[in-house]
Length: 553
Ligand code: ATP
Ligand code: MG
Image 1: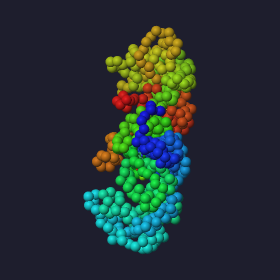
Image 2: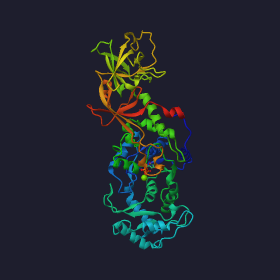
Image 3: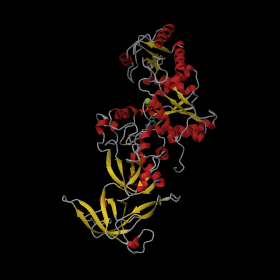
Image 4: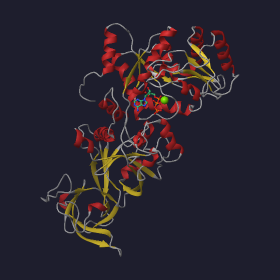
Protein backbone atom coordinates (compact mmCIF):
# COMPACT_ATOMS: atom_id res chain seq x y z
CA UNK A 1 0.00 0.00 0.00
CA UNK A 2 0.92 3.63 -0.35
CA UNK A 3 2.89 5.51 2.21
CA UNK A 4 1.06 7.45 4.94
CA UNK A 5 -1.01 10.24 3.48
CA UNK A 6 -2.90 13.14 4.96
CA UNK A 7 -6.66 12.96 5.38
CA UNK A 8 -8.82 13.78 2.40
CA UNK A 9 -11.58 16.35 2.90
CA UNK A 10 -14.28 13.72 3.43
CA UNK A 11 -12.22 11.96 6.07
CA UNK A 12 -11.76 15.30 7.82
CA UNK A 13 -15.52 15.86 7.87
CA UNK A 14 -16.13 12.34 9.17
CA UNK A 15 -13.49 12.60 11.89
CA UNK A 16 -15.07 15.85 13.05
CA UNK A 17 -18.56 14.38 13.02
CA UNK A 18 -17.47 11.31 14.98
CA UNK A 19 -15.35 13.29 17.46
CA UNK A 20 -18.09 15.83 18.10
CA UNK A 21 -20.59 13.06 18.73
CA UNK A 22 -22.81 14.17 15.86
CA UNK A 23 -22.96 10.53 14.79
CA UNK A 24 -22.02 7.41 16.67
CA UNK A 25 -21.84 5.13 13.69
CA UNK A 26 -20.69 5.98 10.22
CA UNK A 27 -23.07 4.68 7.55
CA UNK A 28 -22.31 5.09 3.86
CA UNK A 29 -23.84 3.56 0.78
CA UNK A 30 -22.81 2.71 -2.75
CA UNK A 31 -25.82 3.41 -5.00
CA UNK A 32 -25.32 2.12 -8.55
CA UNK A 33 -28.09 2.23 -11.07
CA UNK A 34 -28.38 -1.32 -12.48
CA UNK A 35 -28.29 -0.08 -16.06
CA UNK A 36 -24.89 -1.45 -17.06
CA UNK A 37 -21.67 -2.96 -15.79
CA UNK A 38 -19.55 -1.10 -13.27
CA UNK A 39 -16.45 0.71 -14.51
CA UNK A 40 -13.25 1.99 -13.00
CA UNK A 41 -15.02 5.25 -12.04
CA UNK A 42 -17.41 3.24 -9.92
CA UNK A 43 -14.40 1.48 -8.43
CA UNK A 44 -13.29 4.84 -7.13
CA UNK A 45 -16.67 5.43 -5.46
CA UNK A 46 -16.67 1.86 -4.11
CA UNK A 47 -13.19 2.17 -2.64
CA UNK A 48 -14.17 5.50 -1.09
CA UNK A 49 -17.48 4.44 0.47
CA UNK A 50 -16.39 1.01 1.66
CA UNK A 51 -12.90 2.24 2.53
CA UNK A 52 -14.33 4.86 4.90
CA UNK A 53 -16.32 2.36 6.96
CA UNK A 54 -13.36 -0.03 6.97
CA UNK A 55 -11.29 2.78 8.41
CA UNK A 56 -13.77 4.35 10.83
CA UNK A 57 -16.10 1.45 11.64
CA UNK A 58 -19.80 1.44 10.84
CA UNK A 59 -21.01 -0.05 7.59
CA UNK A 60 -21.80 0.46 3.92
CA UNK A 61 -25.03 -0.48 2.20
CA UNK A 62 -25.32 -1.54 -1.38
CA UNK A 63 -28.36 0.19 -2.77
CA UNK A 64 -29.49 -0.39 -6.31
CA UNK A 65 -30.88 2.88 -7.50
CA UNK A 66 -33.53 1.34 -9.68
CA UNK A 67 -36.07 4.04 -10.41
CA UNK A 68 -35.91 3.79 -14.18
CA UNK A 69 -37.71 0.61 -15.27
CA UNK A 70 -36.72 0.89 -18.92
CA UNK A 71 -32.95 0.62 -18.61
CA UNK A 72 -32.55 -1.64 -15.61
CA UNK A 73 -31.95 -5.38 -15.64
CA UNK A 74 -31.27 -8.17 -13.18
CA UNK A 75 -28.19 -9.15 -15.22
CA UNK A 76 -26.69 -5.81 -14.22
CA UNK A 77 -27.62 -6.25 -10.57
CA UNK A 78 -25.77 -9.58 -10.57
CA UNK A 79 -22.69 -8.30 -12.36
CA UNK A 80 -22.46 -5.26 -10.12
CA UNK A 81 -22.55 -7.42 -7.00
CA UNK A 82 -19.90 -9.75 -8.40
CA UNK A 83 -17.63 -6.84 -9.26
CA UNK A 84 -17.87 -5.23 -5.82
CA UNK A 85 -17.05 -8.55 -4.16
CA UNK A 86 -14.18 -9.14 -6.54
CA UNK A 87 -12.76 -5.75 -5.59
CA UNK A 88 -12.68 -7.05 -2.04
CA UNK A 89 -15.64 -5.33 -0.39
CA UNK A 90 -18.71 -6.60 1.43
CA UNK A 91 -21.86 -4.59 1.98
CA UNK A 92 -23.97 -4.83 5.10
CA UNK A 93 -27.44 -4.66 3.49
CA UNK A 94 -28.50 -5.29 -0.07
CA UNK A 95 -31.21 -2.75 -0.76
CA UNK A 96 -33.22 -1.43 -3.66
CA UNK A 97 -34.75 1.99 -4.09
CA UNK A 98 -37.72 0.13 -5.54
CA UNK A 99 -38.27 -1.41 -2.09
CA UNK A 100 -39.11 2.10 -0.94
CA UNK A 101 -41.66 2.86 -3.65
CA UNK A 102 -44.53 2.67 -1.15
CA UNK A 103 -42.75 4.89 1.36
CA UNK A 104 -41.73 7.34 -1.34
CA UNK A 105 -45.33 7.47 -2.53
CA UNK A 106 -46.41 8.27 1.02
CA UNK A 107 -43.77 11.02 1.20
CA UNK A 108 -45.21 12.50 -2.00
CA UNK A 109 -48.71 12.42 -0.54
CA UNK A 110 -47.38 14.10 2.60
CA UNK A 111 -45.88 16.91 0.51
CA UNK A 112 -49.18 17.36 -1.34
CA UNK A 113 -51.01 17.55 1.98
CA UNK A 114 -48.50 20.14 3.18
CA UNK A 115 -49.25 22.18 0.06
CA UNK A 116 -45.75 21.51 -1.21
CA UNK A 117 -46.47 19.46 -4.33
CA UNK A 118 -48.91 19.67 -7.22
CA UNK A 119 -49.94 17.74 -10.27
CA UNK A 120 -48.99 19.59 -13.43
CA UNK A 121 -50.58 18.89 -16.80
CA UNK A 122 -48.00 20.95 -18.66
CA UNK A 123 -45.87 19.14 -21.23
CA UNK A 124 -42.13 18.78 -20.74
CA UNK A 125 -41.62 21.59 -23.27
CA UNK A 126 -44.02 23.90 -21.47
CA UNK A 127 -42.34 23.21 -18.16
CA UNK A 128 -38.96 23.98 -19.70
CA UNK A 129 -40.27 27.18 -21.24
CA UNK A 130 -41.64 28.50 -17.97
CA UNK A 131 -38.49 27.62 -16.04
CA UNK A 132 -36.82 30.96 -16.79
CA UNK A 133 -33.06 31.37 -16.93
CA UNK A 134 -30.44 31.55 -14.21
CA UNK A 135 -30.79 35.34 -14.25
CA UNK A 136 -34.57 35.56 -14.72
CA UNK A 137 -37.13 33.98 -12.42
CA UNK A 138 -39.45 31.36 -13.82
CA UNK A 139 -43.18 31.71 -14.33
CA UNK A 140 -45.71 29.76 -12.30
CA UNK A 141 -47.41 26.92 -14.10
CA UNK A 142 -51.17 27.44 -14.52
CA UNK A 143 -51.62 24.27 -12.44
CA UNK A 144 -49.51 25.48 -9.52
CA UNK A 145 -52.50 26.74 -7.56
CA UNK A 146 -54.49 23.50 -7.64
CA UNK A 147 -56.03 22.67 -4.28
CA UNK A 148 -54.67 19.98 -2.00
CA UNK A 149 -57.82 17.94 -2.56
CA UNK A 150 -57.55 18.16 -6.32
CA UNK A 151 -53.87 17.24 -6.21
CA UNK A 152 -54.53 14.25 -3.97
CA UNK A 153 -57.23 13.06 -6.33
CA UNK A 154 -55.10 13.50 -9.44
CA UNK A 155 -52.03 11.88 -7.90
CA UNK A 156 -54.11 8.87 -6.82
CA UNK A 157 -55.38 8.59 -10.37
CA UNK A 158 -51.85 8.89 -11.77
CA UNK A 159 -50.92 5.92 -9.61
CA UNK A 160 -54.02 4.02 -10.69
CA UNK A 161 -52.95 4.27 -14.32
CA UNK A 162 -55.68 6.61 -15.55
CA UNK A 163 -53.25 8.74 -17.56
CA UNK A 164 -50.86 7.90 -20.35
CA UNK A 165 -47.11 8.45 -20.27
CA UNK A 166 -46.21 12.12 -19.99
CA UNK A 167 -49.78 13.40 -19.57
CA UNK A 168 -48.96 14.94 -16.22
CA UNK A 169 -46.28 14.97 -13.54
CA UNK A 170 -46.07 15.63 -9.84
CA UNK A 171 -43.91 18.65 -9.08
CA UNK A 172 -42.56 19.99 -5.83
CA UNK A 173 -43.82 23.47 -5.01
CA UNK A 174 -40.42 24.87 -4.13
CA UNK A 175 -39.24 28.23 -5.47
CA UNK A 176 -39.79 29.38 -9.07
CA UNK A 177 -37.52 32.37 -8.45
CA UNK A 178 -34.60 30.48 -6.95
CA UNK A 179 -31.20 31.24 -8.49
CA UNK A 180 -30.72 27.47 -8.36
CA UNK A 181 -32.67 26.19 -11.38
CA UNK A 182 -33.04 22.78 -9.73
CA UNK A 183 -35.24 24.40 -7.07
CA UNK A 184 -37.74 25.72 -9.63
CA UNK A 185 -40.50 23.24 -8.93
CA UNK A 186 -38.67 20.05 -9.94
CA UNK A 187 -40.65 17.13 -11.29
CA UNK A 188 -40.69 14.42 -8.62
CA UNK A 189 -42.95 11.75 -10.17
CA UNK A 190 -43.53 10.85 -13.78
CA UNK A 191 -45.86 8.42 -15.49
CA UNK A 192 -44.18 5.50 -17.20
CA UNK A 193 -46.21 2.45 -18.14
CA UNK A 194 -43.36 0.00 -18.11
CA UNK A 195 -42.57 -3.16 -16.19
CA UNK A 196 -39.89 -2.89 -13.58
CA UNK A 197 -37.25 -5.58 -13.04
CA UNK A 198 -38.40 -6.04 -9.44
CA UNK A 199 -41.84 -4.54 -8.97
CA UNK A 200 -43.23 -5.86 -12.24
CA UNK A 201 -46.39 -4.04 -13.28
CA UNK A 202 -47.28 -2.77 -9.80
CA UNK A 203 -46.31 0.81 -10.60
CA UNK A 204 -46.87 3.08 -13.54
CA UNK A 205 -45.50 6.17 -11.80
CA UNK A 206 -41.85 6.34 -10.83
CA UNK A 207 -40.02 8.81 -8.58
CA UNK A 208 -37.30 10.97 -10.11
CA UNK A 209 -33.71 10.61 -8.90
CA UNK A 210 -33.88 13.74 -6.75
CA UNK A 211 -36.99 12.61 -4.95
CA UNK A 212 -35.75 9.07 -4.44
CA UNK A 213 -32.14 9.49 -3.53
CA UNK A 214 -32.08 11.64 -0.45
CA UNK A 215 -35.17 10.01 1.03
CA UNK A 216 -33.64 6.56 0.48
CA UNK A 217 -30.51 7.77 2.25
CA UNK A 218 -32.69 9.03 5.05
CA UNK A 219 -34.66 5.77 5.35
CA UNK A 220 -31.34 3.93 5.73
CA UNK A 221 -30.00 6.60 8.14
CA UNK A 222 -27.01 7.14 5.89
CA UNK A 223 -24.79 9.65 7.68
CA UNK A 224 -22.55 10.66 4.78
CA UNK A 225 -24.05 10.37 1.32
CA UNK A 226 -21.15 10.73 -1.08
CA UNK A 227 -21.67 11.49 -4.75
CA UNK A 228 -19.92 13.16 -7.64
CA UNK A 229 -19.70 16.88 -8.37
CA UNK A 230 -22.57 17.01 -10.86
CA UNK A 231 -24.85 16.84 -7.85
CA UNK A 232 -23.59 19.95 -6.07
CA UNK A 233 -26.57 21.96 -7.29
CA UNK A 234 -28.94 19.16 -6.22
CA UNK A 235 -27.85 19.38 -2.60
CA UNK A 236 -30.23 22.24 -1.84
CA UNK A 237 -33.16 20.15 -3.04
CA UNK A 238 -31.84 17.08 -1.18
CA UNK A 239 -31.92 19.12 2.05
CA UNK A 240 -35.29 20.70 1.20
CA UNK A 241 -37.11 17.37 0.93
CA UNK A 242 -35.56 16.07 4.14
CA UNK A 243 -36.46 19.24 6.01
CA UNK A 244 -40.03 19.45 4.71
CA UNK A 245 -40.68 15.77 5.36
CA UNK A 246 -39.05 15.96 8.78
CA UNK A 247 -37.06 12.76 8.30
CA UNK A 248 -33.54 11.61 9.31
CA UNK A 249 -31.07 14.27 8.17
CA UNK A 250 -28.63 12.53 5.87
CA UNK A 251 -26.09 14.87 4.28
CA UNK A 252 -24.65 14.90 0.81
CA UNK A 253 -20.96 15.45 0.04
CA UNK A 254 -19.51 15.71 -3.44
CA UNK A 255 -16.12 14.71 -4.84
CA UNK A 256 -14.64 14.84 -8.33
CA UNK A 257 -15.51 11.91 -10.53
CA UNK A 258 -12.71 9.90 -12.06
CA UNK A 259 -11.99 10.66 -15.69
CA UNK A 260 -9.36 8.55 -17.39
CA UNK A 261 -7.49 9.35 -20.59
CA UNK A 262 -8.19 7.43 -23.81
CA UNK A 263 -11.50 6.06 -22.62
CA UNK A 264 -15.12 6.93 -21.96
CA UNK A 265 -16.75 6.16 -18.68
CA UNK A 266 -20.49 6.51 -18.91
CA UNK A 267 -22.47 3.28 -18.84
CA UNK A 268 -24.68 4.65 -21.58
CA UNK A 269 -21.72 5.08 -23.92
CA UNK A 270 -20.16 1.78 -22.95
CA UNK A 271 -23.52 0.14 -23.68
CA UNK A 272 -23.39 1.63 -27.17
CA UNK A 273 -20.01 0.02 -27.78
CA UNK A 274 -21.46 -3.30 -26.63
CA UNK A 275 -24.68 -3.03 -28.64
CA UNK A 276 -22.91 -1.98 -31.80
CA UNK A 277 -20.38 -4.81 -31.44
CA UNK A 278 -17.48 -2.40 -31.36
CA UNK A 279 -16.23 -4.55 -28.52
CA UNK A 280 -17.00 -8.18 -27.75
CA UNK A 281 -19.06 -7.38 -24.66
CA UNK A 282 -19.04 -5.54 -21.34
CA UNK A 283 -16.03 -7.59 -20.33
CA UNK A 284 -14.00 -7.00 -23.46
CA UNK A 285 -10.45 -6.59 -22.15
CA UNK A 286 -10.25 -3.12 -23.71
CA UNK A 287 -13.24 -1.85 -21.74
CA UNK A 288 -12.73 0.31 -18.63
CA UNK A 289 -15.28 -1.88 -16.87
CA UNK A 290 -14.27 -3.83 -13.79
CA UNK A 291 -15.15 -7.05 -15.61
CA UNK A 292 -13.05 -5.97 -18.61
CA UNK A 293 -10.09 -5.11 -16.40
CA UNK A 294 -10.47 -8.44 -14.60
CA UNK A 295 -10.44 -10.35 -17.87
CA UNK A 296 -7.47 -8.29 -19.01
CA UNK A 297 -5.53 -9.49 -15.96
CA UNK A 298 -5.87 -6.59 -13.56
CA UNK A 299 -5.90 -7.58 -9.90
CA UNK A 300 -8.24 -6.15 -7.23
CA UNK A 301 -5.19 -4.92 -5.32
CA UNK A 302 -3.93 -2.95 -8.31
CA UNK A 303 -7.28 -1.22 -8.78
CA UNK A 304 -7.56 -0.40 -5.08
CA UNK A 305 -4.03 0.97 -5.15
CA UNK A 306 -4.88 3.10 -8.18
CA UNK A 307 -7.93 4.54 -6.41
CA UNK A 308 -5.82 5.27 -3.35
CA UNK A 309 -3.15 7.02 -5.40
CA UNK A 310 -5.51 9.31 -7.30
CA UNK A 311 -7.04 10.46 -4.04
CA UNK A 312 -10.25 12.38 -3.47
CA UNK A 313 -10.43 15.78 -5.10
CA UNK A 314 -12.96 18.58 -5.12
CA UNK A 315 -12.19 19.62 -8.67
CA UNK A 316 -12.61 17.72 -11.96
CA UNK A 317 -9.45 16.31 -13.45
CA UNK A 318 -8.27 13.80 -16.02
CA UNK A 319 -6.12 10.92 -14.79
CA UNK A 320 -3.54 9.29 -17.03
CA UNK A 321 -4.35 5.76 -18.11
CA UNK A 322 -0.63 5.11 -17.67
CA UNK A 323 -1.06 5.50 -13.90
CA UNK A 324 -3.48 2.58 -13.90
CA UNK A 325 -0.96 0.60 -15.95
CA UNK A 326 1.77 1.56 -13.53
CA UNK A 327 -0.28 0.14 -10.64
CA UNK A 328 -0.86 -3.23 -12.29
CA UNK A 329 2.75 -3.46 -13.39
CA UNK A 330 3.94 -2.85 -9.83
CA UNK A 331 1.62 -5.52 -8.50
CA UNK A 332 2.43 -8.12 -11.14
CA UNK A 333 6.12 -7.50 -10.83
CA UNK A 334 5.86 -8.92 -7.33
CA UNK A 335 3.66 -11.88 -8.13
CA UNK A 336 3.86 -12.99 -11.76
CA UNK A 337 5.85 -16.05 -12.76
CA UNK A 338 8.55 -15.32 -15.32
CA UNK A 339 8.17 -17.54 -18.35
CA UNK A 340 9.25 -17.57 -21.98
CA UNK A 341 7.04 -17.10 -25.01
CA UNK A 342 8.03 -16.26 -28.57
CA UNK A 343 5.47 -14.05 -30.28
CA UNK A 344 7.08 -13.56 -33.69
CA UNK A 345 9.07 -16.73 -34.19
CA UNK A 346 12.10 -17.53 -36.28
CA UNK A 347 13.96 -20.82 -36.01
CA UNK A 348 17.41 -21.19 -34.49
CA UNK A 349 19.39 -24.38 -35.15
CA UNK A 350 22.31 -25.16 -32.86
CA UNK A 351 24.64 -27.16 -35.07
CA UNK A 352 26.94 -28.56 -32.37
CA UNK A 353 24.13 -29.66 -30.00
CA UNK A 354 23.09 -33.31 -30.51
CA UNK A 355 19.95 -33.40 -32.64
CA UNK A 356 17.10 -35.15 -30.88
CA UNK A 357 18.57 -34.61 -27.41
CA UNK A 358 16.52 -32.83 -24.77
CA UNK A 359 18.03 -31.32 -21.68
CA UNK A 360 15.87 -30.16 -18.80
CA UNK A 361 16.91 -26.79 -17.44
CA UNK A 362 15.53 -25.31 -14.25
CA UNK A 363 14.02 -21.84 -14.29
CA UNK A 364 13.17 -19.78 -11.24
CA UNK A 365 9.59 -18.60 -11.44
CA UNK A 366 10.17 -15.19 -9.95
CA UNK A 367 13.77 -14.36 -9.13
CA UNK A 368 12.76 -10.76 -8.40
CA UNK A 369 10.91 -11.46 -5.19
CA UNK A 370 12.36 -12.66 -1.93
CA UNK A 371 9.64 -15.19 -1.20
CA UNK A 372 10.36 -18.46 -2.94
CA UNK A 373 8.10 -18.56 -5.98
CA UNK A 374 9.32 -22.01 -6.99
CA UNK A 375 11.02 -23.34 -10.09
CA UNK A 376 9.96 -25.07 -13.26
CA UNK A 377 11.47 -27.33 -15.88
CA UNK A 378 12.37 -25.87 -19.26
CA UNK A 379 13.30 -28.31 -22.05
CA UNK A 380 16.24 -27.31 -24.21
CA UNK A 381 17.15 -28.84 -27.57
CA UNK A 382 19.05 -28.18 -30.77
CA UNK A 383 16.16 -26.36 -32.45
CA UNK A 384 14.58 -23.37 -30.83
CA UNK A 385 12.15 -20.60 -31.60
CA UNK A 386 13.52 -17.15 -30.96
CA UNK A 387 12.04 -13.72 -31.49
CA UNK A 388 12.53 -12.40 -35.02
CA UNK A 389 13.40 -8.96 -33.69
CA UNK A 390 16.33 -10.40 -31.74
CA UNK A 391 18.30 -10.94 -34.95
CA UNK A 392 19.74 -8.25 -37.20
CA UNK A 393 21.47 -9.12 -40.40
CA UNK A 394 23.33 -5.82 -40.39
CA UNK A 395 23.49 -4.85 -36.74
CA UNK A 396 23.06 -1.26 -35.63
CA UNK A 397 25.55 0.31 -33.27
CA UNK A 398 25.27 -0.95 -29.70
CA UNK A 399 23.33 -3.99 -30.85
CA UNK A 400 23.85 -6.64 -28.20
CA UNK A 401 21.58 -9.29 -29.56
CA UNK A 402 22.05 -11.76 -32.41
CA UNK A 403 23.84 -10.83 -35.63
CA UNK A 404 26.25 -12.70 -37.88
CA UNK A 405 29.28 -13.58 -35.74
CA UNK A 406 27.75 -12.15 -32.55
CA UNK A 407 27.12 -13.96 -29.25
CA UNK A 408 24.18 -13.84 -26.87
CA UNK A 409 23.04 -15.79 -23.86
CA UNK A 410 19.90 -17.88 -24.16
CA UNK A 411 18.02 -17.24 -20.91
CA UNK A 412 18.49 -20.09 -18.36
CA UNK A 413 20.70 -21.92 -20.92
CA UNK A 414 23.89 -21.37 -22.89
CA UNK A 415 25.79 -18.75 -24.78
CA UNK A 416 25.42 -19.17 -28.55
CA UNK A 417 27.27 -17.65 -31.47
CA UNK A 418 25.57 -16.94 -34.77
CA UNK A 419 27.47 -18.68 -37.55
CA UNK A 420 25.16 -18.15 -40.53
CA UNK A 421 21.58 -17.62 -41.55
CA UNK A 422 19.22 -18.72 -44.31
CA UNK A 423 16.99 -16.52 -46.44
CA UNK A 424 14.01 -17.39 -48.59
CA UNK A 425 13.48 -16.17 -52.16
CA UNK A 426 11.93 -12.94 -50.97
CA UNK A 427 14.90 -12.14 -48.81
CA UNK A 428 13.29 -12.94 -45.46
CA UNK A 429 15.53 -14.58 -42.90
CA UNK A 430 14.05 -18.02 -42.17
CA UNK A 431 16.64 -19.75 -40.04
CA UNK A 432 19.60 -18.84 -37.92
CA UNK A 433 22.43 -21.27 -37.42
CA UNK A 434 24.43 -21.08 -34.23
CA UNK A 435 26.94 -23.00 -32.21
CA UNK A 436 26.75 -23.15 -28.44
CA UNK A 437 29.47 -22.99 -25.80
CA UNK A 438 29.03 -26.13 -23.66
CA UNK A 439 30.87 -24.61 -20.63
CA UNK A 440 28.56 -21.57 -20.54
CA UNK A 441 25.50 -23.15 -18.94
CA UNK A 442 23.65 -20.68 -16.72
CA UNK A 443 24.56 -21.09 -13.07
CA UNK A 444 27.69 -23.15 -13.81
CA UNK A 445 29.39 -21.02 -16.45
CA UNK A 446 33.14 -21.58 -16.64
CA UNK A 447 33.55 -20.26 -20.17
CA UNK A 448 34.92 -16.89 -19.13
CA UNK A 449 32.95 -15.33 -21.96
CA UNK A 450 31.02 -12.16 -21.22
CA UNK A 451 28.04 -11.29 -23.38
CA UNK A 452 25.83 -8.26 -23.05
CA UNK A 453 22.60 -9.59 -24.48
CA UNK A 454 20.21 -12.26 -23.15
CA UNK A 455 17.31 -13.44 -25.26
CA UNK A 456 14.34 -15.70 -24.61
CA UNK A 457 13.52 -18.83 -26.58
CA UNK A 458 11.36 -21.95 -26.64
CA UNK A 459 12.42 -25.43 -27.76
CA UNK A 460 10.61 -26.27 -31.01
CA UNK A 461 10.06 -29.88 -29.99
CA UNK A 462 8.52 -29.00 -26.63
CA UNK A 463 6.77 -25.74 -27.53
CA UNK A 464 3.02 -25.36 -27.25
CA UNK A 465 1.15 -22.91 -29.39
CA UNK A 466 -1.15 -20.19 -28.17
CA UNK A 467 -3.15 -17.28 -29.46
CA UNK A 468 -2.07 -14.01 -27.95
CA UNK A 469 -4.16 -10.87 -27.87
CA UNK A 470 -2.35 -7.61 -27.46
CA UNK A 471 -4.35 -4.50 -26.65
CA UNK A 472 -3.89 -0.83 -27.14
CA UNK A 473 -5.98 2.09 -25.88
CA UNK A 474 -9.56 2.02 -27.09
CA UNK A 475 -9.54 5.64 -28.31
CA UNK A 476 -6.97 7.68 -30.16
CA UNK A 477 -7.51 10.90 -28.20
CA UNK A 478 -7.18 11.67 -24.50
CA UNK A 479 -10.74 12.85 -23.96
CA UNK A 480 -13.07 11.39 -26.62
CA UNK A 481 -16.03 12.88 -24.73
CA UNK A 482 -14.88 16.45 -25.21
CA UNK A 483 -13.91 16.22 -28.87
CA UNK A 484 -16.11 17.51 -31.66
CA UNK A 485 -18.62 15.05 -33.10
CA UNK A 486 -19.39 11.60 -31.81
CA UNK A 487 -17.08 9.91 -29.31
CA UNK A 488 -17.05 6.84 -31.55
CA UNK A 489 -15.33 8.84 -34.29
CA UNK A 490 -12.24 8.54 -32.13
CA UNK A 491 -12.12 4.78 -31.70
CA UNK A 492 -8.67 3.30 -32.21
CA UNK A 493 -8.97 0.88 -35.16
CA UNK A 494 -5.85 -0.93 -33.91
CA UNK A 495 -6.89 -1.43 -30.33
CA UNK A 496 -6.50 -5.20 -30.57
CA UNK A 497 -3.82 -7.22 -32.33
CA UNK A 498 -4.20 -10.99 -32.48
CA UNK A 499 -1.15 -13.21 -32.77
CA UNK A 500 -2.64 -16.46 -33.99
CA UNK A 501 0.33 -18.69 -33.34
CA UNK A 502 2.87 -17.85 -30.71
CA UNK A 503 5.13 -20.46 -29.10
CA UNK A 504 5.11 -20.87 -25.36
CA UNK A 505 7.00 -23.04 -22.90
CA UNK A 506 5.27 -26.35 -22.15
CA UNK A 507 4.86 -25.23 -18.52
CA UNK A 508 2.16 -22.82 -19.75
CA UNK A 509 0.03 -25.65 -21.16
CA UNK A 510 -1.30 -25.94 -17.61
CA UNK A 511 -1.69 -22.22 -17.08
CA UNK A 512 -4.30 -21.32 -14.50
CA UNK A 513 -7.01 -18.79 -15.33
CA UNK A 514 -6.24 -16.96 -12.09
CA UNK A 515 -2.48 -16.92 -12.57
CA UNK A 516 -0.52 -14.01 -13.99
CA UNK A 517 2.65 -14.40 -16.01
CA UNK A 518 5.46 -12.24 -17.17
CA UNK A 519 6.52 -13.31 -20.64
CA UNK A 520 10.04 -12.11 -20.12
CA UNK A 521 11.05 -9.09 -22.19
CA UNK A 522 7.46 -8.83 -23.47
CA UNK A 523 4.95 -7.96 -20.78
CA UNK A 524 2.42 -9.39 -18.39
CA UNK A 525 -0.12 -11.93 -19.60
CA UNK A 526 -2.97 -14.04 -18.32
CA UNK A 527 -5.28 -16.65 -19.78
CA UNK A 528 -8.38 -15.30 -21.44
CA UNK A 529 -11.81 -16.69 -20.68
CA UNK A 530 -11.96 -17.86 -24.33
CA UNK A 531 -9.04 -20.20 -23.68
CA UNK A 532 -9.48 -23.98 -23.80
CA UNK A 533 -6.86 -26.69 -23.17
CA UNK A 534 -6.75 -27.31 -26.95
CA UNK A 535 -6.67 -23.64 -27.94
CA UNK A 536 -4.85 -21.56 -25.40
CA UNK A 537 -5.57 -17.84 -25.52
CA UNK A 538 -3.60 -15.26 -23.55
CA UNK A 539 -4.29 -11.58 -23.03
CA UNK A 540 -1.57 -9.05 -22.67
CA UNK A 541 -2.44 -7.20 -19.47
CA UNK A 542 0.22 -4.55 -19.91
CA UNK A 543 3.61 -4.19 -21.54
CA UNK A 544 6.81 -3.97 -19.54
CA UNK A 545 7.63 -0.40 -20.35
CA UNK A 546 7.10 1.93 -17.50
CA UNK A 547 6.19 5.22 -19.14
CA UNK A 548 4.34 6.74 -16.19
CA UNK A 549 6.97 6.08 -13.56
CA UNK A 550 9.69 7.60 -15.74
CA UNK A 551 7.84 10.81 -16.39
CA UNK A 552 5.99 11.41 -13.17
CA UNK A 553 7.49 9.67 -10.22
P1 ATP B 1 -22.61 6.36 -15.48
O1 ATP B 1 -22.93 7.58 -16.28
O2 ATP B 1 -21.30 5.78 -15.79
O3 ATP B 1 -23.71 5.38 -15.51
P2 ATP B 1 -23.57 7.19 -12.99
O4 ATP B 1 -23.06 8.20 -12.02
O5 ATP B 1 -24.86 7.46 -13.66
O6 ATP B 1 -22.43 6.90 -14.01
P3 ATP B 1 -24.41 5.31 -11.08
O7 ATP B 1 -24.65 3.88 -11.26
O8 ATP B 1 -25.55 6.21 -10.82
O9 ATP B 1 -23.63 5.78 -12.35
O10 ATP B 1 -23.27 5.57 -10.01
C1 ATP B 1 -23.15 4.93 -8.77
C2 ATP B 1 -22.15 5.68 -7.94
O11 ATP B 1 -20.89 5.68 -8.59
C3 ATP B 1 -22.56 7.12 -7.77
O12 ATP B 1 -22.39 7.48 -6.42
C4 ATP B 1 -21.65 7.88 -8.67
O13 ATP B 1 -21.40 9.15 -8.19
C5 ATP B 1 -20.40 7.00 -8.68
N1 ATP B 1 -19.66 7.17 -9.93
C6 ATP B 1 -20.10 6.95 -11.18
N2 ATP B 1 -19.15 7.28 -12.09
C7 ATP B 1 -18.08 7.70 -11.38
C8 ATP B 1 -16.78 8.18 -11.74
N3 ATP B 1 -16.39 8.29 -13.00
N4 ATP B 1 -15.95 8.52 -10.74
C9 ATP B 1 -16.32 8.41 -9.46
N5 ATP B 1 -17.52 7.98 -9.05
C10 ATP B 1 -18.39 7.62 -10.00
MG1 MG C 1 -26.77 7.35 -13.21
